[in-house]
Length: 330
Image 1 (cartoon, rainbow, N blue to C red):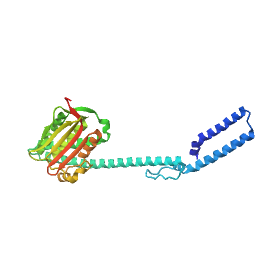
Image 2: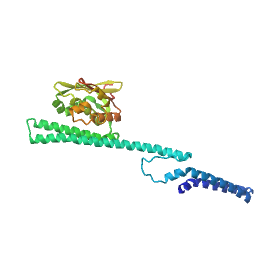
Image 3: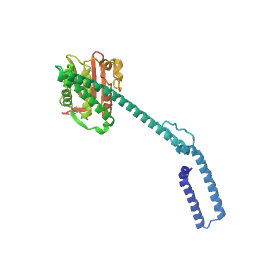
Image 4: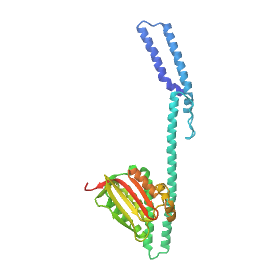
């Protein structure tokens, strides 16, 4: 009742102001007749009471609902009134509740994905730690090489975890700049040279020194690192190559990373960018979280780049990354 009274105070004040204004006008023009004025005020007062009563009872279900404590976000919104304002408010609350539920479910899904990824990451970190302990207990001729390899595995895993934690707030961590493509790729290959040597895979660059791209250096480096390490991982063998080339056309640069490794089964291709999808190769070779290409897809989407992947089982895989760029002499 108090809520309704607060809602109707402006209307009551307006009605009272009308009656006062009418009284003043009638009195100034010497037309004031007490009986007639009382009759007019009475009729208007009765009409006001009838109108407010109608408004009160038509809005009563909404008023009761607004004053009832909410027990759950899943509590349905009942449409108990056909009064236009009440119906509009209920429709608004229903839309708001739907948006809130969708947002809540989305956050819960992301939280479950994070927990699952952390669990897998912890399991992966246990493996190199166990190997390091064995190496230290029984050092052999390849002591330093084996130790460095396990340290590299831990570094790659830690880097991936760090970037995954920053992915949600990537917009606050972006700095677009012009980058020399060959310099960037060469730096990544030099950093991961032990990975190439261990897997007996040779990098082959077909990149013009004049090519540049516009992107964020840190995140684009993360993209290339994920794609190159994936190519090396599944191309292990003497004499194998990972070819990195780029072409410029119409203000865009397409970077292609091609390997002649095991390839991806055709049935797995539509799902390679899904979270936690390891596929047949992941199960066969192990140590796959199924998150590398998922992160690649998410980062490309946020940076405005496009990524495509073609593969033939037993022949190899081609990954194409397209972004804004050009040549220095343009």
